[in-house]
Length: 110
Length: 119
Picture 1 (cartoon, rainbow over the protein chains, first blue to last red):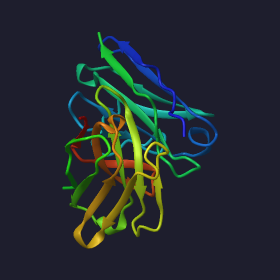
Picture 2: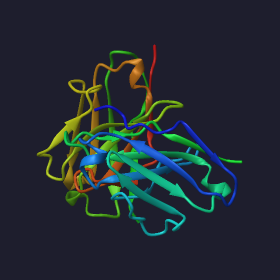
Picture 3: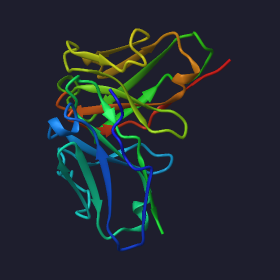
Picture 4: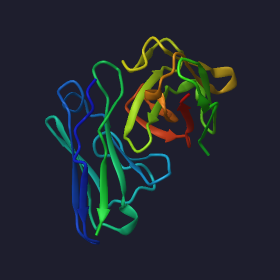
């Protein structure tokens, strides 16, 4: 199972919006509604921020939103804040029942 | 409060074995699929293995298949990972995760246990 493709880095100024893409295949991202996103601050465990393509778990700010088109999913952070500086990973359910993550995107708040 | 606590990591020589454990609390463990995810130093997340609630469905990443064995004891609310024939490439922080569905998403993560394979 090949890793999903994410940009290595994305940056933005406070208050701006940024979007992180996550590209897979019809066997994972394109074939299921089970794309999830995780945020990881340095030295911390990953935390779920989006499930099922666009659902926000309780406690996650509505600045975070998810979407999907074809084999590419996207995470958008609106109103960028300093605390959003972290690594972000996408993941998808796969036809092989094996897990797959994206390579990760480092978000920098300028 | 949902809690996952990993243990068993440490420094091990190449070719040797190690067994990781994950103690779960705060949710109905016997109803949940569980997974191991690892992260090599400075690298991204890599899914390692997953096990269904009743242990009937088990899957491994190609990189560990034949060397690692995942198991669980629902009576003890515990998840395990037996790692054999370890190599430097297995050096990583190993996270225990709780899944929704078999693997729709991972809604709870432990803090991880560090495995270092070195002579």
